[in-house]
Image (cartoon, rainbow, N blue to C red; front, side, top):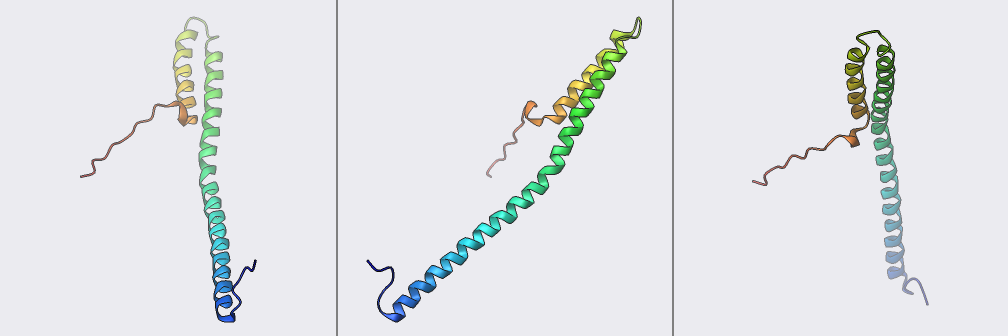
Length: 107
């Protein structure tokens, strides 16, 4: 079984077509890698925000625990700090918040 035609003109066209297909596949792979790198650059700020939100939640939780040791008003001081810690946990983890979906009319 032969891969290409026996006549030189037809064989040259077939080889040229194969080379063009190979170049197009290589270009598509290169493009995909460039797009992947761009996406990875865009992900980093989100990771930093998530980490900051986690740290903020931890520190607010620690402050609430420390405030609860204050005589007479410790529980009153702890509640707002716990609420803020819970809010910052939701800020750090966007998947835990309910999603709203806007619906656009096709008209």
